[in-house]
Length: 301
Ligand code: AMP
Ligand code: MN
Ligand code: MN
Ligand code: MN
Image (cartoon, rainbow, N blue to C red; front, side, top):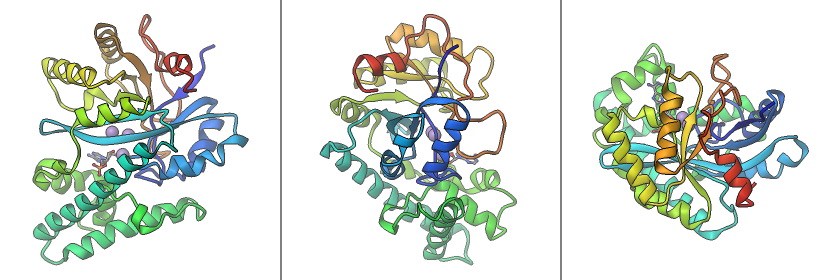
C-alpha cells in the first residue's frame, strides 16, 4: 500500500479555516504520514507547529506557498524542506510579509474607491478582523500579532460578505478581487526567477504549484516551466484534488520531459468538501519521479 502524503495545505496562519494544530490532527486522522503545511507567504504556522509535531505520527516538512510573478501572471511556488533557522529564509519571508502588508493597503484603497460608503481603513480593518476571527474561532492558542498577520484577498472577501456587499466570497472575487480588477496589485511580489533562485540557494525544493490554474496555453505553460527550471526549480505539482481527466498524465509527462520531480498536494483550506481532503490524492502517474524520494535522498526528510 502506498503512503499518504500531502505537500500543500493551509491553516489560519493564512487563509485556511483550521489552526495549524488542527490541520496536523486532521492529517493524522486521515492517515497522512508526511505533511507540509504551506501557508501563503508566511512560516508562522509551520514554525508554531514544529514544536508540537513530535507527538504526532505525521512527519512535518517545513513549507510555504510563495506568491510571485512571471511576466504579469501571478504564480505560486511551494518551498519545501527549508531550514527554518537559516537567516536568509527568515529575511526572504520577512520581505514577503512586508510585500503582503503593502499589497493589503493597495487592495483596501482600490476597494474604497469602488465602495464610497467605506474608507480604505475600514476595508483593511474589516479584512484584518476576519483574519483574527478565523484564528480565534478555530483555536484560541493560535492568534498572531498584527505584524505577523497574513491578510489576503479571502479576508477581504469574508468582510464583504459580512457587510452584505456580496452574497458569497466567490462573488466578491468575481466582482472586486481579481488581479485585473484591482489594477496590477501583483507587482508587489518578487519575480518567479528570483523566488526560485532563493529557494534553490537555501538547499530547499521549489515546486511549481497547480500548473493548470494559471490559464496558460500549452505553449505558455512549457515556457513557464522552462524558465522555472532555468531558475533552479525542481518539482511540479502533478497530483491535486478534483483534477480534469488526463491532467495528471499530462503533468507527469512534463516532469519527465523537463527532468522534474512530481509532487502531490490537496491545497486543503477548510473541511467543506469530501473531494478536497488532506492526503486524499491519486498516485503519481507511472514513471514520474517523486518529490518524496528526492527529499529522502537529499536527507531533507
Ligand atoms: P491572495 O493570497 O491574497 O492572493 O488570495 C488568493 C487566495 O484566494 C487563493 O489561495 C485561494 O485560496 C483564494 N481564492 C482565489 N480565487 C478565489 C475565488 N474565485 N473564490 C474564492 N476564493 C478564491
Ligand atoms: Mn489560499
Ligand atoms: Mn495557490
Ligand atoms: Mn495553496
